[in-house]
Image (cartoon, protein in one colour):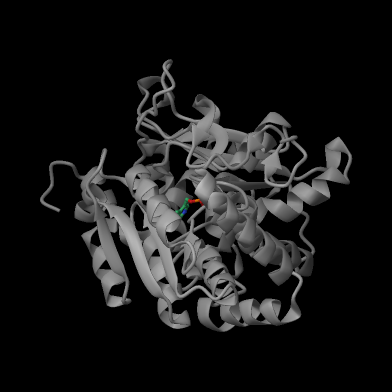
Length: 401
Ligand SMILES: *Cc1c(COP(=O)(O)O)cnc(C)c1O
């Protein structure tokens, strides 16, 4: 396949899957191509996002933290979505698409459980049978999200193979899909997986960026830079997408600088991190060719981050291409830097962010001097209620909490 073929981003992306899945991927590609231009689908999606998810989310001027950093700070409040993060934008979109494709059943993989909860939510409201694959180790660590999914009517299927975490759950979900593809749609949770998923999930998350463009224009604000955290990369690509397009029309000096922040965990030098783009190498994982964490023999290295949502050894292929073409800059911050930024936002703005989102704040903090007096937008991808216990434990390791 040539690199300009659909589903490729330069040399990255593609469909590295068993032959039996190709017809399902083709069906999905076609269904999306038709749905995206169909006014009745667009109307259903917009209505769901407005009345159920709670969009548009506000663009909030964070003046206290902005003053502390010496710049004009704008937070895109994805934390205010139903279920507490941007993931529902994608699960509602894909579930509506599955309904259009006459599927009766939806499956999903989940690590920390956030995507599983967002998928189970969409399945409850749109009346799908739902099965969520989750590693046994993750089920133990995220018992509350297992309860949530079950309350929402989903079946949580324990995965006991391998390290019993996200990568193993993904393999099992793919196996289920191969077997039940006639009746079942597989909702992938980020801009990863085989084509068409990376582009499909980006299209559903692009609403973040489109709203941001409109909200900045309404205030007469021209942004200088945007920061977003990158796990698989869906909230980042969602807010970046319209700016990537408009940057292509602009002279180098007028572009909005786009910065993706990965999780450096304990530090890149320790090898215990999730920084696939800043410290990984290209390879194939979960159906696509992109950057990932691997050793000299090509063996996958387990990812680490204080935030479960960034704890993934790969990254979406479009990000790999955006990095290689210099359209987005990627940096990484450590667990400790993210924890400090987490506390800043709590104390100065009364907002408890997801630990994932705190990475974007920490990335800005590190280079705040460079942006003095300028307009900075951060994608606040989710709220941090889920992280409160973990943060309390980390800040008071000897304590009783
Ligand atoms: C899952 C998650 C992320 C990471 O996923 P992306 O696909 O990189 O956006 C970031 N923030 C929150 C709040 C999440 O739940």
